[in-house]
Length: 136
Image (tube, rainbow, N blue to C red; front, side, top):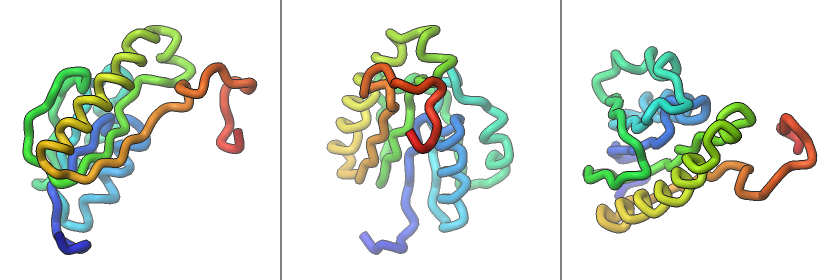
């Protein structure tokens, strides 16, 4: 595929801070962006400015369950890990991290899509600094 070709891109965790900003950056290139979030920690407010774009679509979906769509690229950012949300439901954080990765890797394999797999710092264990700064 041409490096500048328009793609159908899936962004999981797209209603979070990073996901919503990534979607905002992808749209001016003409890509079709599918936004997947279950809104457990993400906010609809973060994607409201993008809803008027005809190449942007929001799908409410829990990524711990498989998703069957056709896609060219996947940015897998879904994870409810933050100092506020992780202690509230650490099981959901773990399920999201594991099942989500398995489901998105399966989707990437089936569609031959490229995937960027992101994770939370929670996978490294308890930090020495709370809350964590960017320098940490």
